[in-house]
Length: 520
Image (cartoon, rainbow, N blue to C red; front, top):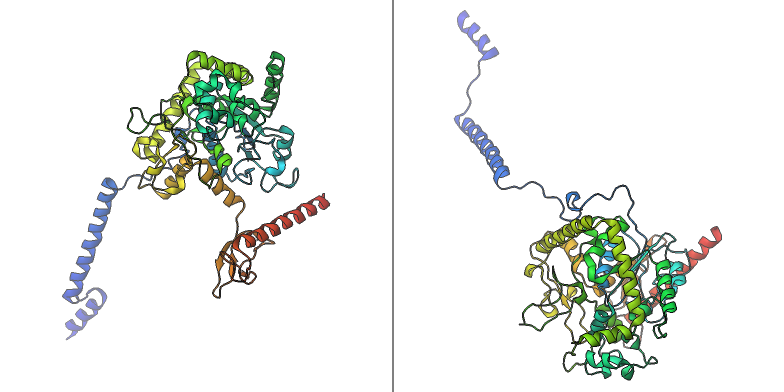
């Protein structure tokens, strides 16, 4: 008896019953599953999961040689000259500004009052000097520096781009054949070159496209008779106004100089040729303009003609593509006809190569090679069809189809499918046509309320601009009959509601400006 009691006490301290058998089986299965999960996770991590990929754009090891301790320029004025690959440069400014949250000096439409001399009030949102700060200006204008200075900060970096006037005239003839009377009357470019005065009347609208177009864009009298003194004075005016003049024929070298002048990373100046025109008909050898090794002389911008013929409207019917062939003698005649432009081009071409010499020819070659390699890399990632531009009708996304005008076909790009969201957005910025990009930026800077029909019919404004910290007209009922097309009794149309909203926005802005003035 005593032995049994002691045994029970000892078991109470250290003995235990094994419990039901099913509990042990369940525990064993759980341990096996956990071990298998860890083992599978280890195998999965080693074989299937790649290391976290860094963002494709602005990777530190892909930005070329260090620029030192300089600070990037963010106040920029680019004079967007015609037919000089300037649309591609503007795309760079649009991308940089959008990525850094900068404010653009945008036009009401698509050009800043062109072909009239620029006036500050052509800038959307401008009220008076120093009331609202703008960072970037780059849409087509006829340069007028006193008015530009009313809009842009004092430390603004001014730059532009030029092109051989013969190549420029060839491109202008193709794009503006139905817009410029001087071109419309001529049977071919050679016919125009043989006797331009036969076709040219300075009094007719849009004939500025047919003579000294660079001189005109820089804000000077393009019909003035050439003299060496006049040409030198014009050159001096441009030199005083602009810190850098790029050369279209040497676009990649220009981008290297621009990158160092602005202290920008390499990806900020990498670009694909925008608004390139098709050089040969479909089915012919060689394909269209735009591509790795093709001359930038053959690249041109089509967006400017949109304002001349109407962006949203139709375009004049064309019978056949114009004959752009020129003999050496005709090319020389075009240089004589555009003598002021020829002087500018020669002068700034010399300055350009002086800048390259100071930069270092070998260093320039190395950085151009880096730029082209980076462009090819981004093209492989971003673009279908091997990065080659395609005809607009073949682009599935209508939002990135380039605007078509005149007899030439403007080419665009298609995005590579299957990209992640961040890469898609970055690639889209590289290929978004100028007109659509301007609309995107405009909508961000000047958001409008969305007018929708309420449950009982009247239109209501939801979202949009803000005044005093609250959404303007948020869920406020508009007058009876407002809506798409107006009510049966001739009530407000949607356009009228938007005009009223814009009027309130302008009134609020003016009140704020007056209040600022009183505080000062």
